[in-house]
Length: 184
Image (cartoon, rainbow, N blue to C red; front, side, top):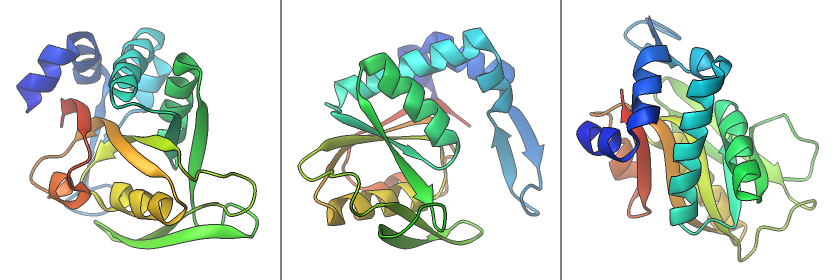
């Protein structure tokens, strides 16, 4: 799959290979954190990665881009701007005033919850493409999908920058189209 992504988005894959910083044993022992901060800080790398994400999102039929807290906000907002669409910030628990729609889920190293406003944003009937930085176990994308389905939206695609293979993320998110820019 790494070869397929590199062939489809060669400039973005090269920029990621050059700029992603790998940090061992963070946030806990045995985890290799893939820091996209250097990619976001480099104008050319950021540009080609956002272009690749936007190309994938438009192919999936996005009407609204859902950005997952927190790096997904940065990427999702850039993709939405490029596609002239709105961006839905899917927040970690406790960051929004009530009322909220909430979905609890398990992470690869703990538990968390995602929320969106319950009365300020109507996503019913909207086709949403979810944008995030890394697909690992798939828990965050699966939780965001469940949350949006409960709110009446349809998740029509997932677009992520990196995928950590072997953690079952693809299996957890099911049949919805997934585009990965590069394999980790």
